[in-house]
Image 1 (cartoon, rainbow over the protein chains, first blue to last red):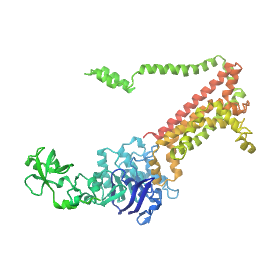
Image 2: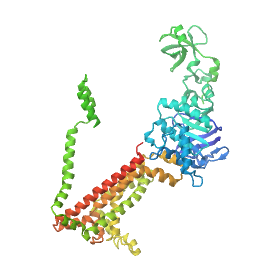
Image 3: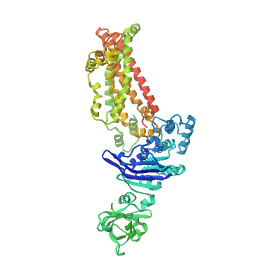
Image 4: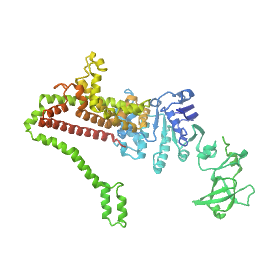
Length: 338
Length: 297
């Protein structure tokens, strides 16, 4: 089921959490909302879920597959929501947690006990936790709890799955494993999924489409490669991956944004277009070497990813003066300051 | 005790730097021996010896006399009043105290801080003052009594009066035990229930309430225990009519006034055993509700 949110505004007291946000999530896709904390991404997710509602006077609307659900509450929207801290029912077993949504249905739609039991089993197999039905949440690891929360959300057969920082509270390794597991899982059941994250790596590696948010607005929407290669704003440039900001060199004095791997080093006397810089620090890890430079006429350190070979060939030492250059099209790709 | 054991192990092991290791494994604030000694002495002096005295004084009288003392019609009637009305008052407090705690934690309204402070008033007020004030208000000509007497409800010098006094003094116990638990309660859990299609009633009954049951039970037990032992505020409003509105603590006082110490301690014994039994039941209930809740996950 596709999701459309248009003209969403949300204020909390004086604080504007979302300003004129428009978002389109195509059916069956995995979309990530990426941004720093306070950018409004969780608020947007909660509005999609029906846990929060857009401002009345903002004229905003949310629709699922063309049907307006702006004023429909979470329970009636048919969404599965997974909370950052799982929000499991602590006094219930895993089985009762997962079956909660089914048991809460009105008597006429409620499956019988045997059917509920079978469905719980099926879901727990899906999240690879079959056999833990009688455990309590306190007896599970973080990763297991997260998967119980997922199974619980899926029990009511939602049309849309929404996840708020699903891996935020897990340690790095479990996080990576679960990430791939979620991707595979989402492809298998083909459910439209939106997840919130502040981790750019997570968003870029996992999502079909990345929505970059900042200061209550959407900065850019696109597939991960596009967002990384052609950032639409200085913010996106700085937020996604390493980037050098060079003030005053662009047309009309605007800053340039250039990624470390796009810069080439040469001997200072070599190329006439090269700008000169002094080497501050060198560090080689694996095949690449990270060189930190001080560019003439700029206070910011400039980082360059060179090959280790090149660094060895040039016999670079801290204190050396080298030339730096970057292809012209990179300069053109640098976005204007908004 | 773990660190005690660890301490001994460090001392026994051939550690290259025993001094440092011993110092590190010590607690931040030393003095287990001293503070434990004080604890035991204090509890013995303040709790154990007085309680033992009750039994010792009682043991002076024969079994038959004891039985007669604690089962006379007047005394049995007073048990019924004390325990019955206390139970009723504690249950009322469990319901209304819960609502007060809910309001104080879930909503922000003007004068919230003042209302919050008011809850503690029954703690702070001398019980005799409370008794006098309540009697003045609920007597037949009092401000509130005026409203009830025409309806046939005798709010003073009756069991209803005792109920009013016991409800008054028991209120803070429930509020103050439920409030912190409610403050810690994760709102996301309610949202999770709502997003799964549960209505408000279902969310409350099967998600919020179970998490609060241990705290509610504790509050209820404290309110009940306080009500059973309450004397000062009750004797003003109850009218103290033997067989009808006489509470057990007053029976004890009456015996004492007649220099009938054995009978007084005999009845006190019964109160004591009843209190212990109550504590036991409540502790078991709490443990049971926590075990099904796994309260801290």
